[in-house]
Length: 579
Image 1 (cartoon, one colour):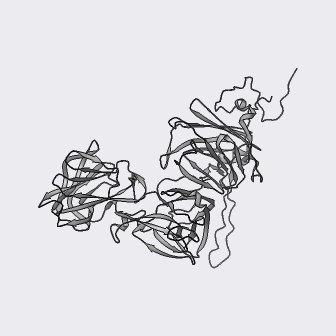
Image 2 (image 1 turned 90 degrees about the vertical axis):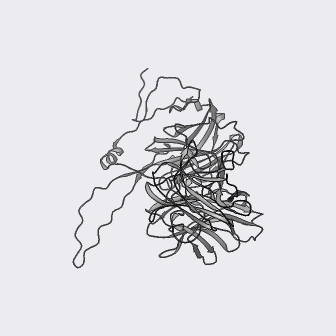
């Protein structure tokens, strides 16, 4: 019997659907309806192609498989309008008539993101808050699509900090269905696994669904936008100080090394470390040594001597350093009486961030090593040091920290600005609670220049904040921050007291150049204390409170000719066999 297929969107596929899970755009392997659960939306998403209707999960062969069914073609993406204003009229005289302009079409990607907690019974991972839904995620699978086709699929794991897993994700979209897989190698036994699914288009419209242990489902449409983490830069200060260590140089054999990677290539004339205490000290030698399998080479590239005082101590040292090269700033005894009554103590901090504080870039070599006569020992500390000439300085100036209490009408955060206009939809703070704070912790972003106004506000419950410092994520509808303005981002609450409060750590250095200039983003970003009754702000340029603001996902910009052709293309999909 002849068969007629009508419509340009149908394709006949003469093959048998597989029951083995694979990401191939063929959904016959999800026919077991016991694997799928209907989403109990109470309010539909703005677009059917963003509205999750059913979902499922399965693990096989070291891969975690995830399925989403939508009410229409899945995650289509759509054009982003571009508006152009007619130029103002020159004065005097009438405005010239503007000729017609062929506008560029901009394609806005749609984004599906799975935040996965492979073991919901432990405290590992970062707390993600999306509206009223929360999860402590240790995996994040992101699928980007445009016009119903997968643009990219990526997997990140929490290390802490999101770290890419190359080749760790797969995804496919066909019609109203999406399937993806995450590589679970190295994550051990799964225990009460749960995941949070968010969908969004470039406008921030979308759906949020959270699955509980045993893959039971709750949730529904929240209309929340999706964040996209950014590289180090504007508003990306993940450098934290929560402890200090003082190494006492009170024996001739005792030495300390600040290991670091040079950020610039230049000729230095001196090196500096911070002495936190001195007692009738001897003369010490300080300078640079090359790296030898992670330890100092034992031979100075340059060095000088000094009798230390409390504070930053400069050792003359003239040599050239090269960007990307690992060095050790070594301080050791040189001459004079040394012992318990004749010594100095050199400061370093914890944790070891493996970051360069001024711009947040990665330095995997950072560490502190000590020598007490039996070889160099790595202390897993953060070096406190400066290398410089008369005009160029680099290093870590934060030699201590302070804990800032948030309760009553006192809040804490930072003033900051951005270098380019950009839309943001997520922020993070490094915070803990003490006792039992009675009310929510609220994150606010407020424009403080020009005409002050609040641009974002989102809260988390006290139960979402731990008793040890950790990153708390706040998600909010997209807001555009302007490079022409200054903003304050801060945390506040209501009620509480000195026993029941929230706390953030502030990284601290001494005031003035060059130390303030080496803090995160120099003096552009700085700590601010907030009186929430105003609000009013009191700034401290030498201090920074760790925080991050994270942009909304970027648009995909298409050439005009290609964009104009896209609406003429007829997309076809394989229609899976129906039982």
